[in-house]
Amino acid sequence: MFKEFWEPIQLSLEISLVSGITVFILGTFISWLMVKSPFRGKIIIETMIMLPLVLPPSVIGFLLIIIFGKNSWLGEAIVFLFKQPIIFTWWAAMIASTVVAFPLMYMSAKTGFQNVDSDIEEAAAVDGANTLKVFLYISLPLASRSLLTGGILSFARALGEFGATLMFAGNIPGKTQTVPTAIYVAIDSGNMTMAWLWVAATVFISFLMLLTVQLKSR
Image (cartoon, rainbow, N blue to C red):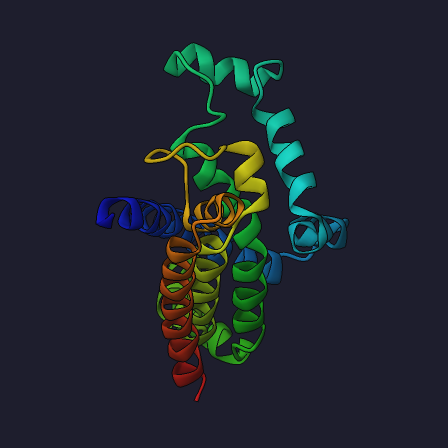
C-alpha cells in the first residue's frame, strides 16, 4: 500500500522540480528581456505567454499533442533522435507542467524587474559593468523576492497540473501517473482511502509552499 501511495507523490515531486527549475530559468531570463527590450509587437508575445492561464487544460493538452505528435516535424525529429515519441512519457508530463506553470513565473519575475530602480542599474553601467554583470549583480538580487515567489508558485502549479498532463502524458502507474490523476482514478474506482491520503499529502505540500511565499513577502 505504501508503494501505491508513494509512487504518484514521488513522480509529481520529480516532475514539478524539473519543470520548476526550467520555468525559473526561462521565466527569469525572458521576463528580464521583455522588461529591458522595448520592441514592436511585445504585447502580442506577452499575450501568448499568458494564454495558458486562461485556456482550458484540454485545449493545452490538444495543442501539445499537435505540436509534439508523430505527424508534426518536431514529433518526427524526436522519434528520429530518441527512437520513440514523447507522448505518454515522463517528459510529456514535465512539458505539460512547464507550459501551465510558466505564466506565473513570468508575471512574478516581470513585476520584480519592473520594480528595480533603473538609476541603480544605470549607475553600475556608468561605473563599467557590462550588461551581464548588471543583470547578475544588480537586477537579480534586487528582484530576488519576486523571483522566489514566482518559483514557489510555479512549483505548486506544476504539482497540481491535471488536464493537460492527462491528455498529453496519460495516466500510466509508475511512469506518468501524478497525484492529481491518481486521485481522479481513485475516486472513479471508489478507493476513497487512497484518494483522501493523496489529497491530504497535496494539501500539506501546497500549504507549506504558500506559507513560505507569505513569510518571504513579509
